[in-house]
Length: 109
Length: 126
Image (cartoon, rainbow over all chains, first blue to last red; front, side, top):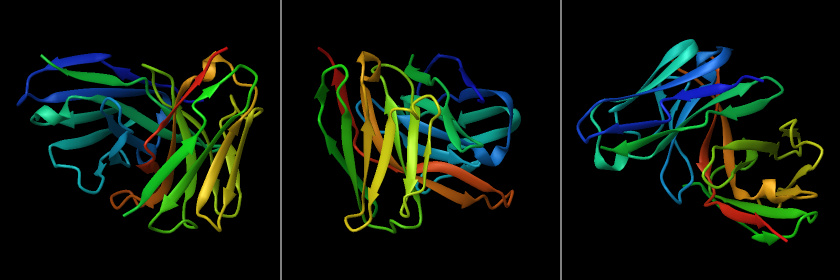
């Protein structure tokens, strides 16, 4: 089973700043199998990015994804107040099976 | 617009069976897999399993012995049963639509969850 490790656990930034969130896989993952989600308190996760770099419908272009192999990154270019939330990466594995990272909490500094 | 609405018992005793149902409104039911995902309080997400319209299932190996996912295509609904629950099964349970899509830049398939139910908190306590 591929394990996804996200870092940092908590990221404290101010609105307008750039956020860089990391997702590292325990073994190589096809970039097409990597997705990112945003979750706010009391809400279901929301799909942001699929295929490592493709934005989901309606997602602002300040969100971007990149990476390959074992290292993937979610970047938010200029933080808006509504972007402070928890972010999860997710990968598809054979069997099939889907696993998530433990999450990065993006909080207002 | 696709909507997933879920319901089920929110309080169980140890050893009982958890039962949840998710109804799908809008969009195609037959063209996707339909998943259950859970989230213990304050923790991350765990995929439980999935089913398609013809009843083909895939389960998380760690839960497979206790999980049954079924489908009712006449109602566009699918259901989760988790037997012999313990306090460790306390979580918010979500239903979700699992998509397989071809990524334009790589021409390879991508698998992700694009629509989610509102979540149901299930508490296991004696």
